Structures are given as structure tokens and as C-alpha cells.
Amino acid sequence: MPRNNTVPTFVKWAGGKTQLLDQFKKFFPKKFNGYLEPFVGSGAVFFYIKRKYNPKKVIISDNNEDLINTYIVVRDNLEELIKLLKVHKRNHCKEYYYKIREIDVNELSDVEKAARFLYLNKTCYNGLYRVNSKGKFNVPFGRYKNPNIVNEENLRKAHKLLQGVTIKLQSFEKVLEDAESGDFIYFDPPYYPLSKTANFTSYTKDAFLDDEQRKLAEVYRKLDERGCLLMLSNSDTEFIKNLYSYDGLKIHKVKARRAINSKADKRGAINELVILNYENYSLTI
Image 1 (cartoon, rainbow, N blue to C red):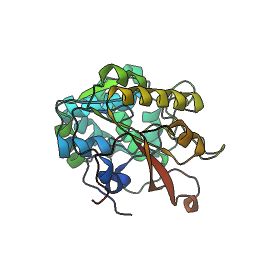
Image 2: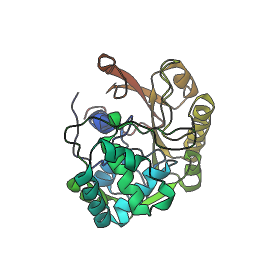
Image 3: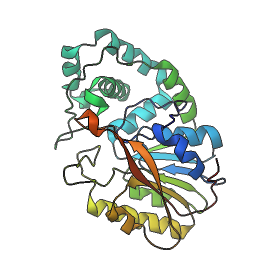
Image 4: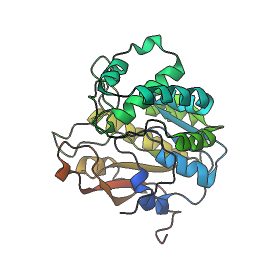
């Protein structure tokens, strides 16, 4: 599958959509007003939309406090962030990693929190974000020879694209307070598990399972009735297809690579669903 590496994502994120942009391009609406993304994650779709369409109203959000703080710092305080990342890079080793991981984040400034978050993100095992029941990051050290701790080029591009963007720490249903008819909204929630053992369903201490998926489908329906243009990604399961099986929706499939699995031979291409409520896209691109 072709991979689009031109969007300036600056975090590794489970389910990040950089690898799918070439397949997604044909699904984006030709015209829309504002753009909202309630599960921003790595921001691959957001960065693509912002650069290509440059809508006047852009609102990105997530309920991951570390992630949202980092987006705000990249937008508003980039130079200090880069300085701190260079300190982490100079000191990087296994012992230093665990020392930084154990720091009480409540004692850090916002820019220090963002630098810690990015450092751990680039050097932890498999780029995984995982917290325990108390919300404490607990991913072990990743054995990378030369982790890209300070990607100045991407950070500067991201900083530029984030100017004028509203960034919010909030749960996905809050999108109902901001969305207006004609807005384009992309949903990329934690995916519904393909099996009982495939249970990585959250990037915070709160799980995202059946009830949360049903709540999301209800929000999708309300926005559909409001006249918003909606695109949603999720796993190719009967549960998800049944939630979005009503008239007016179109369900397509794309091929994605598994990124998180302890066994390398289980990281092959699988089907994912793309659910749309509009038709003004081109399947010939």
C-alpha cells in the first residue's frame, strides 16, 4: 500500500491514519464549511485537511490530557519545547527513560509535560500509549538504536498548521456543541475489538467498548440529522455495521496494517470500515 509521509504528525499513535491517507483522499467531501475531529490522535487526517482545504473553522479535540496539552504547546510554545526535547535526547538511555517516566507530572509546567510526553512516546515500546487504572503511563522502555526524539522539521510544520486551530480537551459527544450544518466531521474512535482478546480500546484509563460505541453512533445520527458531513473509521465487525446500517449511510472498506501486536506475523493487512453519510466524493481519484 502506498504511504503518504507528507503530513507533519509528531506522535506515534495506535491506529494513526498516515498509512491510509492515500485511500482516504477519495472519500473526503469536495466542499464543506468547518472541520472538526473529536478523536484527533496523531492528527494525520487533520493535518491533511488543514493543508489542502484550509477551512476557516477548525476544532480538534480528544479526552487524552497529555496529547491535547502537547498539541497546544506545539501551537503556542514550540521553541521552548524543542529546547527541552534536545535535553532529553542528550540524556537518553534506559535508566533516564524510567527516571522521566516516574516523574510526577503535577510538578511540571505544560511545556515540560509536553516534552516528557513526546520523549516517552518516541522511546517507549512500540510507540504505545497506555496508562494504568490511576492514569499513570506504564509502557516499558523501547530498544531503538536511534529514536527520532527531536523532529524539528515536522514540529515546525505542525506548528504552522496549528495556527488558528481551536484545541479542546473533551469527550467526543461535546462535538454536538460546536458542529453546524455543512461542517465536515471525521471520527476515528478506539476501534471495536475484532475478538475478545483484541482489547486495546482506549488511550486513557477509560475503556471504549459496547456502550461507548453505541453512544458514538447516537452522536453520529444526531449530527447526520443536523446536516453535517460525517466520516467515521472503525473495525470491520458485525457489531459496528449494525450500528450504522440505516438509510443514507455508505459503508466502504479500506486495507490497513496492524501496528500493535506482540507477534510480528500478526501485523498484516486487515479490513477497516469507512462510514459516510454523503455522496459528494470521487471514487475515481
